[in-house]
Amino acid sequence: MPEQSPTLLRDHTTLRLGGPAARWERATTEAEVVEAVSAADDRGEPVLVLGGGSNLVVSDEGFPGTVVEVATTGVRPDVEDGVSCGGVLVTVAAGEDWDALVARAVERGWVGIEALSGIPGAVGATPIQNVGAYGQDVSQTIASVRVWDRTLRGVRTFAAADCHFGYRHSRFKADPGRHVVLDVTFQLAQGDLSTPVRYAELARTLGVEQGQRAPLADVRAAVLSLRAGKGMVLDDEDPDTWSAGSFFTNPFLTPEEAAGLPDDAPRWPQPDGTLKTSAAWLIEHAGFSRGHGQGRVSLSTKHTLALTNRGGASAEELLGLAREVRDGVAARFGVRLVNEPVLVGLEL
Image (cartoon, rainbow, N blue to C red; front, side, top):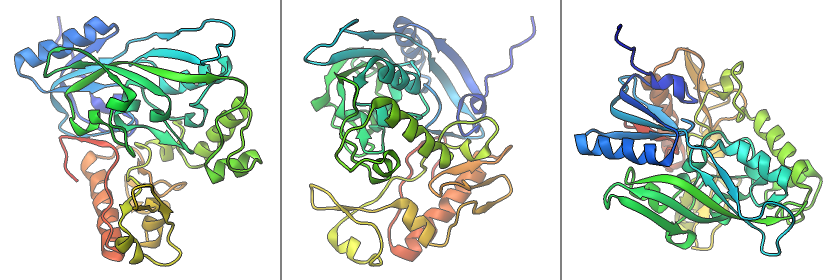
């Protein structure tokens, strides 16, 4: 029997980057997830837990251990029919597609994640990064996260308050690799209208004032349109979407640091006294326009926050562009941008 070719991570990541995995395990049940991770830990092998591959930049050399592809399924609401005064608790397997869940929520009248439409990847990844867009974060609706703790070798459940959610951050990201998400339970309201629309661009698109509500389906359609216009909805025919989404997070600055920015730089005051500014604004005003790059990698022609593989690129080529942008912003504004995607076998 001929030897099977190794599985290439580039075939399983939205950036289409990454070399071979030493071992590949596809887990379709929770028991298979735990077994695959535990067996690799017993062998002393490194483990990479893979969902939708939308937030990864993987080395061209690949991964020298076991990749566990989480392909579990199941969406279990506690209210099947009718409307409950307390809303609905929905427990979702980690391997479920995130956008499919949002579409289902909009169809069923589950309120609270409609503005997170079009985000690629699996449900299990969302609490790790505290995924957010257009004025919503998953932390606003997560009730609990159930995980396999690789250190304690057991299943644990974290209530939302124990997840230590912050901007694109959580306890799971702070202790990378320790917790393998098994499922996520969301507390969603029920109704026909969205949560208050907080994001100015989305409110304008919907024709409502900020803070007003809009029909769930309208919010989803508007978000999908806005994301598509920025190359943030996956499309096999459009290299602008061959990315890991926003590559850099928005910086949080002290008042003193923010004072060093030009007067027209965005500043959004935060409860802790810091000011958030726009990574995209900094990139553009440091001289990096849409489409900047050369050869097989470039900034998206639609959005400067996305670094794209134009076809056949290497991970090192992409990181070279990331370093150029990061260093250019630092030289111009004294602000050091931080990558949002997880780097596997690489350093920025």
